[in-house]
Structures are given as structure tokens and as C-alpha cells.
Image (cartoon, rainbow, N blue to C red):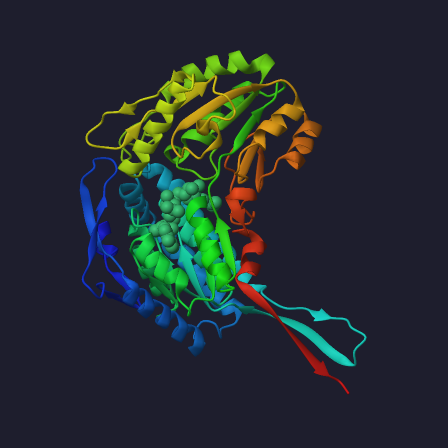
Length: 484
Ligand code: NAD
């Protein structure tokens, strides 16, 4: 069976595969060649309605929401096991769909998703309330209950991981879900629907509707039968989603754009820092909300570090995601490649010096862009301030710790950040001053389902992963029993 046969390009509703009501289908493109990979059903409002009804019925019949946390946890642990048993196939799907190197998909995307199901499966065992002491002649206690039907909307860049970061805690808490993956990269979501069913998740508890944001996404967002929205995507769409959900008084989790600063102090171990600096901006071809595209460097080591990057960055292997040595694959779509080209063009116009890269890599019909380092841009350049979302690093010098913190905090975003220093007190002091949801010290992208992540400012609100995420998929009910 090929990967595509195992992830049929149809909608998954109430435990069965079906075409869109109007028969619409859309093409999925292979970013490494520009060729059509396959087609998937394109859901319209009627399909989203059917999916939400299925999720509502499944929630109300209690076959999942009525189980104990431990029973649900066992099923989620089985999901993790099935993900690992099907690791090669899932990695293959994710790699062809997104253009990520296969080896990376296997080691990071697949394993991280399995770990999330494992983690929330374990947390489900401990899902409980608390007895509260009061002066009342009563027994007062709280129950943690699921919220109901969750509408999960995910972006193109980490389809497996970001679906898992929503579905695993939502399911652990006893909710049912309608998932709308990104239109460009829908394949692993469909395969996961089959694996969830195989693991024992009852029909209707998870539904997957592939389709566009303005049609399927909007229908899900506005559906009265949806009780909570879990959104990951751009800040622009996130603002709209939060406004619509806000008007309907629906709770939301908003995981939005990022534009992290990576601070290198003069006392940093440059040899180890350079690996983290490169990883931070080329990982996932720079299509990484938690990437580090803004390098801030203490002036005494600024020129030295630029020299190191000028040698090291061009040596990063760019190419076919199926080759074992590839570190940087193509951009996930042509529109992403064009956007990066436009930003680099703008950087040149604004006086930026392109230290390396600065051009497409012509390889087949793929959407490749060379890892690019740009110095000498003013801090107010859109290339520094906005989310370029490609393998582009801007480098700026600073003179004092205060200036470094001010530059780091100067954009509209606040998702991730990083510090390179060998001084312990400085590491903790600066970590406390950075306006970001996560701070990495002396490495980048150290992520684990046990550690909450999410943003501040334009990067959104709410946290995924950790016990915080599980809590966000529950609501507290207080029960007060008269003892009189
Ligand atoms: P996007 O905002 O264009 O799309 C995200 C999802 O929203 C897609 O499924 C899309 O179909 C859907 N959508 C679009 N319009 C909609 C509407 N009107 N109603 C409902 N849904 C709608 O984002 P993208 O280009 O797919 O992803 C890249 C963005 O996601 C970047 O900004 C990146 O930083 C961000 N991101 C954030 C995180 C995080 O954890 N904070 C993680 C990954 C990506």
C-alpha cells in the first residue's frame, strides 16, 4: 500500500470516508518538483456542518467523554504506539507533502507527535478536581469536565505536530474534534484519522475536513455547534479568528506568528553558538514560527561571527528532501518562495548587505531558496520587523545588555527567543526581560510536550503542551453538597 492509499483524499466524518457534498477536489503539490502529488476532497459548509454534527453526537453519547481519564489515556497511548509502528509511512507523507527532509520528519515530526499522545495519555490519568475547604456546612468540590466540540485549525508548516498538539490534549480531556488542516498540506491529518480510529477512538470523536480557510475554516469557526477554537496560523488570520470567536464568546487558543531574536553576548561560546544560530533560521526551511531569524550580536564579536556564518551557512546541504544528507528542503509552496524573494529584494533596496545566499536554488521545478544572511539593515526595516518565514537571517550589532533587550523586544511578536552566553546570572537576568513565551539558553528549539509553549503580543495567547494545555481543554464545575 502506498502512502497515498493509506491516507485517502476524502473527508473523515463520523468514522467514515466521504467525498465533499458537491464533489469538489483540490490538488496537492509536491514542493520538491512543483508536480501534482494527489488530490483531496475540498469541504464546503455542508460538509463542515456534517462533521460538527458528528462530533456533537459523539460528545453527547458519552462513548468518549463519559470514559474515565485513565480509559482515554490508554487509547491515546495506543495512538502513540501506532504512530511509531507507522513511522516510516507518516514521515514519507509529511516529507512529500511539506518538502521537509525525510530523515528530519522521522526523527522530529513523527517522534514528537507520538510523544505528545504519550504525554497527554499519561496526563489523562491524573485529570481530577479538588475538594475545597469552606466555612459552609457543605462539601465543596470541583470537577474538570471537557468543553465539548473543539474546532482545530492548523497551518501548513508542521501538520503532524500541530495537529497532535491540539488533538492529544483535547481528546485526553474528553472533547470531540473537527480538524481542518491547511489546504496545502492535508495528507498526514487524513492518515492520522485512520490511526486514531484503529487505536480505538470511537467514530465521530475525531473528524477531518480538508478544504480552504475562507470556506471550510470559516464555516468551522462560525458553526454554533463548536464550543472551542484551537487555532495555529498567521497573526492576520488569527486576529480574525479571535474576533469571530470572541463575538460568540467561545474560548480560543491562539498560536500565531513569530519573529524571534537570538542574542549572542561577547562571552558566548561561539563555536557551539553557531550551530544553534544556523538551526534556528534554517530549520524547516525557515518556515518555523519558533525560528530565530533575528540575530543580535555584541559588537566585540560581531565581525568575527559574521565571518564564521559566511563560511558555515553556504555549507548547509540544501536539496531533495528524500536524500539522507539534505538539511534544508524546498519551501512548502510557490507563494512562500515568492514572499521570501520579495523580502530579500527589499533588503537589498534598503542597503542590506547579503553575506551569503540571496537567491533561489534551481533544482527541478522545486521551490528552493538558499539560506541567506543579511547584515546592515536598520531595525525598522520590514525585513527585520515582519515575519519573513523563510531561511533568512538578519544580523544586527548591539553595545549593551539594555540595547540587546530593547532590540529583541522591538517587534510586534513574542513567541520564542534565545540567548548565547556563558554567564549564568546574565542568562537568567536577560531571560526574565525578554517578552516571549519561551527562552532557550545556549541552544535552540528544545521542545517537549511536557513544556508549555505559546506567545505574547502578536504571537497570540494560551499555551499548548504541558499541563497548561490540558487545562485549556477543560472547564471547571463546582459542586457544593449541603451537609445540613
Ligand atoms: P494561515 O493563517 O494562512 O492559515 C492557518 C490555517 O487557518 C489554515 O488551515 C487556513 O486554511 C486557515 N484559515 C485561513 N483563513 C481562515 C478563515 N477565514 N477562517 C478560518 N480558518 C482560516 O497560516 P499558514 O500560512 O498556514 O501558516 C504560517 C503561519 O502560522 C505563520 O505566521 C507561523 O508563524 C504561524 N505558526 C504559528 C505557530 C505557533 O505555534 N505559534 C506554529 C506554526 C505556525
